[in-house]
Image (cartoon, rainbow, N blue to C red; front, side):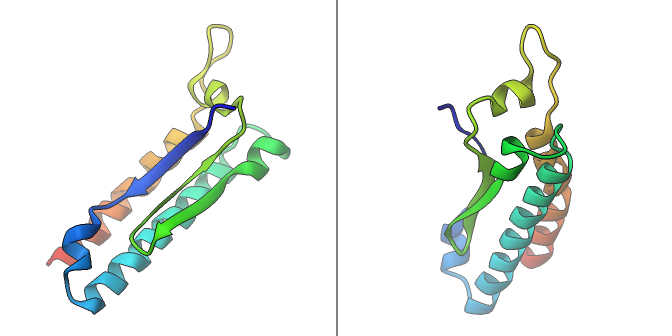
Length: 111
């Protein structure tokens, strides 16, 4: 099985050493970004129902690191396409969709 996992990681070290309130706010940004990414990927999955759409899930390594993805073996073929099938980038599009708001929110925290 070839997993297709898109992750949203931030550098935890500087935030881990920062004040607790900043870490808590950064954690909320990470969690919102991940849940928004899952929702977008599910909403834009090229099938109306089924294994692929149902397999899209979030995961958390800790309060500042996590991501979303699917472990369905044909997911990379759907997302990136094949010689015989055009790409339907539901996962990569989800990253492109959430990144601007993630970046802006993290920039606001840094002020």
